[in-house]
Length: 170
Image (cartoon, helix red, strand yellow):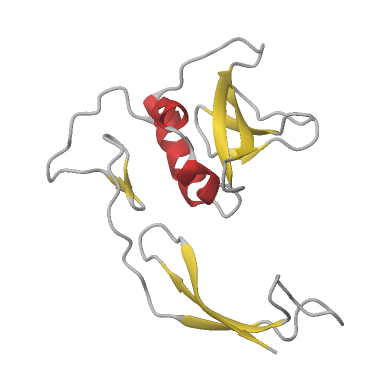
């Protein structure tokens, strides 16, 4: 069985992006490799992490890169649940160098403090209905339960994370 490594570019001055094709970001960057495996309940999670420079040598991330990594992996649709289940040996690689608390002077980027890595509760906006009946062509949009008619979604006012509150099926 082959290992399932997910790879992401983490530039020194930009946002995290998945590795696709052969194009590398301009400037200096780190390559973050996360091994995806299932746990004893068959849930997928990140179990190992390798952080490499452009030449493939191990590298330590800057605090800004660690922040961007934490923010991306904990909120992106494809990675959020894997990140929540990851062991501390993976997530601790993205903690700020100085983990002293900021007290009441946090520097918030969405729902994560840039300096200390603390998370704040989401501030949810109104629930909005999305009509899915016109999407997906003749088959429509579907999941494991059936064809979706509409979804009711709430969005955090601070970090733009979305959560489905309710799904209506045809």
